[in-house]
Image (cartoon, rainbow, N blue to C red; front, side):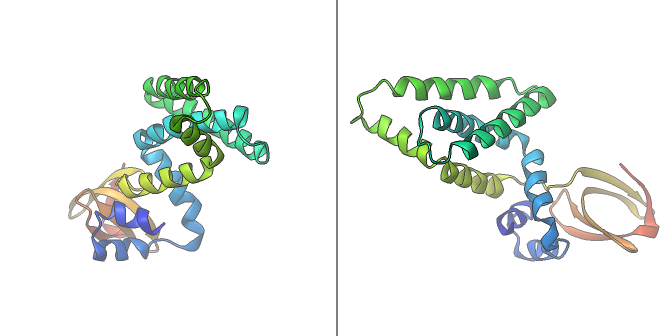
Length: 191
């Protein structure tokens, strides 16, 4: 959560502090889920690496966590289908298939080969691989977890992300990564 706040704040300490004041402990799920959706290209790249490992781990990996790996694989496939159909990211299934094919081919290598050993370790530790990928996504993705809005006010236009709505005002992170408070009474339209 902290890494995401810094990333969307442009790694500015003061802005990150102000953004953090808009979040509560109950906002963790929305922040994570919204970040994955907001950073759909980075999420697709992450899936290209992780989804084939999950499927390969289910097929050829250790049997002790098979149910969890299957559930994560199904979730990964659903997210991949949604990304591909929503954004036309045709390279996502193609890339995932290519990585899976490379894993399948590498299984034919002799067991002592370093590549085969590295893939076996990656399949056994796919949770760690996915976790590191999510941390990279959190650090690199600068799009906030809420939709972009253009807010027309009596004082002009504010373009950015409404992080929270409080009685009487909106907390907005502008496109320039500045935190601003917009008085609700000044808002003419939002869209």
